[in-house]
Length: 603
Ligand code: F6R
Image (cartoon, rainbow, N blue to C red; front, top):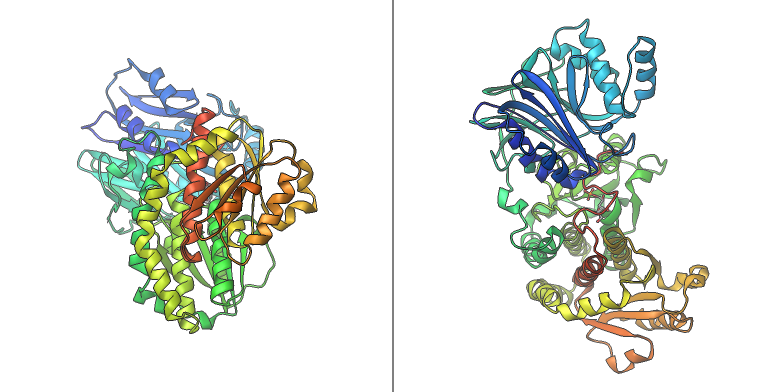
C-alpha cells in the first residue's frame, strides 16, 4: 500500500534510478506518483495523476543529472488521487514521502493552523511533513527532531525524508509500515521492499520501529531515538530481479498461475514429512483460530474444513480486521494461525500481536521472507512461492492452501487418524499435482469458452458445499476483483434463503461439486437455479457420471479427482484462469485492478 524509494549516490542518475525502482513497487498502489530530486542544489518536485508511466512521460526530456531523489507511488487514503495530493510533500525545509496513515492528523493540523501554517492538500502526509518542519524550527538535531515527531504521530508510517540543508542525505524511519535500507557500491537506498532495489543490489538492512536511518552516498548509519548508533545485520535478498519480470507472459497474473504447478509440488515435497512440524504439537491446544484477510482468509476456510473433517480439530476462521477488535477468548492454549502472502497486512499483523499479548502460540503462514509477520510469529512456515506481483493473488493463495493441507496431515498423524491408504492416496496426488495443474492450464479452450459465455453479464453467483463453498468464495473474489463483474459466493443450500430472488433468465451460476457425499445435494441446488432461468456452469470431478450433466448444466467442466488435500487447489486453478479470461474479454487492467493495491499496510 503505497511504495517508497529513495536513492543517493554519485554513480547513477538518481531520477532514473528511483523511477526504475518505483516501477517494481507499482503493485503497492498506482493512483498517482511523484518524485523529489536534488537537481543542481534545488529540490524539485514532479508529480502525475495515474500510473508511473504518466510521471515518466512528464519527466521525459529532463536529463538534469541528479544525485539524490525520493519517489512514491500512491494508493489514496486521505484525499482523492490527484497531483496536489500526490507525494512527495514539501513544507518549509522538509520534503518527504510516506506510506501509512497518521491517525491524529486532524488534531495536529489544527495545532499547526493555529500557528499560521497553511496546507495545499487534503492529506495526512502533508500534515506530518509540516509537523516535522515545525519541530525542526527548534530541534535542529535531525534524528532527535524525527524521534520527537514520531513520538507524537499515531498510526502507521514509513518515511523517506530530505532536509533542505542536507540535500544529499535521506533520512528514513518507520512504524507498522515496512521500510528497508539498501546498500550498494553505487550509492544507498531507502525502499518499501527489496523489489525496488534488486536491479541495483541485493544487500539490505531491515529498519525496525524506533530506528532512524541516515543514508548518504557512501555511508549508512542507523540510530535509535537518542542518536545512539545501532549495529544492524546486513541481509541478502533471497528473490532475484528476474523473478520480478513478466518473462514473456502477457500479465504477471498469468505468469503466477503458470508457476503454481512448480510451487505447489515443491511445497508438498518440502513439507509433507518435514521434521520441523513436530514442534507443533496439536494436542497442546484447546482451540485453533485462523485469522487472515481476503484470499488468505479463504485459504483459511479450506484449512478449517480440512482440520475439522479430517483431524477432528475444531477451528474458527476470522477476518483479521474483526478479530483484532473482538473480545473472543484467546488463551495460552490457543493456536492462532495468521495467513499472509505479504507478511505485512496491517490487520493480520495487529491480530498476531493481540494473540501474542494474550499468550497464545502464533503460527504464521507467510510468503515474503523476512516480513514483519514472519519475524514476529512464534513459528513461521514459509510458502516459498516467490514474489507475487499481480494484485490478485493466485500462487500466493494456493500455496497457503497447500501448507494448510500439510499441517492437517501432520495433525492427523499426531491423532493417529491418518490411515496408510489415505496417506498413499495423498502421496499419489502430491506426486501428480504438478502435471494435473499443467493440464488444466494447457486446456485453454475449456476456460476460454466458458469465459466467452459469461463475460457480458452483470451478475454472477458461485455455489458449492463444504470445501467447494470455500473454493467458491475465492473464485468469486478473483472474478470480481479483476473483471469488475458483480459476483457472490453462496453455500449451495443457502441460496434459497433469500438470494435466489436475484436469479433470472440467463444469470450465470457457477456450481462446484467435488465432494462425494454432498454431490447430489448440490445438484438439487443447481436444479433450483436452473428452474428459475440460470445459465449453469457445472464444475465437478471425473469420478461422477457425466451422462446426467446435460440435465442441469449448460457447460460442464470435468477436472481430475484428487483427495480433498489437493482438490481446492485444482478447482481454484481453473477458476483463476476463468477469471483471467473474463477480465481479458472485458479489457480490464488485469495486474492492477482499479481501487486496489497489494500489501494492505493500513487498517
Ligand atoms: C485478493 C488478494 C487479497 C489478499 C489480502 C491479504 O486477490 O490478494 O484479498 O489476499 O489482501 O493479503 P496478504 O495475504 O498479503 O495478507
